[in-house]
Amino acid sequence: MDVQKLVAIKPQERQIAWQALEFTAFLHFGMNTFTNREWGTGKEDPLLFNPRRLDTDQWCTAMQSAGIKACILTAKHHDGFCLWDTAYTDHSITASSCPQDVVAMLSASCKKYGLKLGLYLSPWDMHEPSYGTGHEYNDFFCGQLEELLTRYGKLYSLWFDGANGEGSNGKRQTYDWDRYYALIRQHQPEAVIASVGPDVRWIGNEAGATRPSEWSIVPGRLQDAHKIAEHSQQTEDAGFREQGIKHQDEDLGSRNALRNETNLVWYPAEVDVSIRPGWFYHPEEDDKVKPLETLLHFYKTSVGGNAVLLLNIPPDREGRIHEQDFQSLTELGEALGSLFSVNLLEDPAVKAQSDTEDPVHPAAHLLQKNDSYWKPKAEQERAEIEITLPCPKKISHLVLQEQIRESQRIEAFSVYTKMPKEWEKIYTGTTVGYKKICSFTPVETDGLRIVIEASRVYPTLRFVGAYGS
Ligand code: FUL
Image 1 (cartoon, protein in one colour):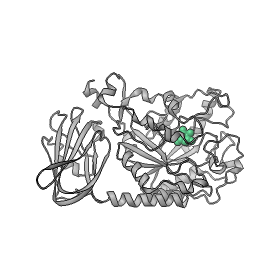
Image 2 (tube, helix red, strand yellow):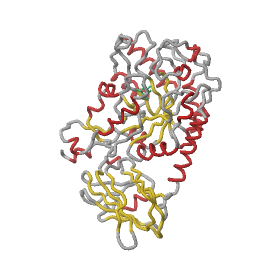
Image 3 (tube, helix red, strand yellow):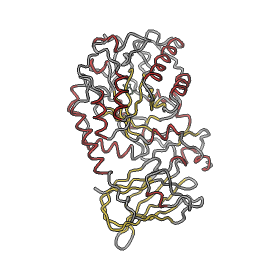
Image 4 (cartoon, helix red, strand yellow):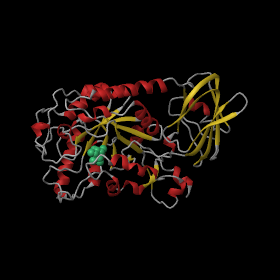
């Protein structure tokens, strides 16, 4: 494998902007909320949709309490019921007991609260009679997509899931993915197309698990829509979510895994996982909202494991985020705030130096929170950085970020702390990518050494932060 070819693969601007959001939310809301199901039938009476206290501002406050920066709403799930006033079907909020355009309401709330909005539009549609006809359904789907792309302002993500229970009703639809993608590029060129799409890779499970070495440079064949669908949820049964974990073990991007691949792409991972057992709200799950430790673990392994976290928070039958979920989110926001708000290296007296630094990209750059970065002056796969603090501090987390504009390069690294007499290794890791959060037993020290043991051509680092607990 020509390693120069690997580092020539770089992200698109829209992928960089998406990755920087770090922590995002999924909002599964729709007919299933009122029928207590995960997958509907498409035959539901629209009048069943009846949120009496619908409050999308409250959704935004709940999300912000956890530090979430963007959200994706299920504008249409598999049952075909639409949360906006669409001209293409009567099966929508317009015929429901609450004829308010939920997409419009959420779009206004997101603007007010400074959150970005994305939309989930299920290709599989159990209600629409033209489903399974090929061209006719593709026209219908593109019509709906175009409404969403043109009416609700700027969208950051269009999310297509791969699920289908096709065969159960004898209908099989050939999706015109290229046409859907072209429509999105035409109307919302800055939005990413996620899951069954070319910009954002579904992590491959719904259990919140990230690979220990998550690569954003992977074989292009992973973008194949049919393959993604094969691995996706095949039945309504939520048990899938726990079983899906095995998919996480695959090595997608090491030099060895890529050695025979000819087509490589930048295809970063997104971790979609629910705060509750189901994707939709079920009253019997009120006492099964995931506790703080689980949510913190998801955050550290996904945001801190070169992925974006897409945490599902399903609004309830009132049309609000249930207090149980709200409380978990608030606790998470507080915990993240107390863990990561004070960077112990953000002090003019802290010094960073490296063995062989490029004068244009000195080690001092990695103490700054901007786009500048450090790299060695020559092509060298191994390099060291030493950071000196003016006095000992208690450190429990180290955050490393590569400059992903220059590709993903680091393959192995170790962190050492300066003990009174010698250096002691406290952490070993593999990939870094957009962000790596290293957690370890708190240690008191005034010196840190980051040793990049292996990288592709040469490493870069854009940011290093140290945090205490
Ligand atoms: C899956 C769907 O079948 C689930 O209902 C959920 O929307 C999940 C995010 O994607 O494919």
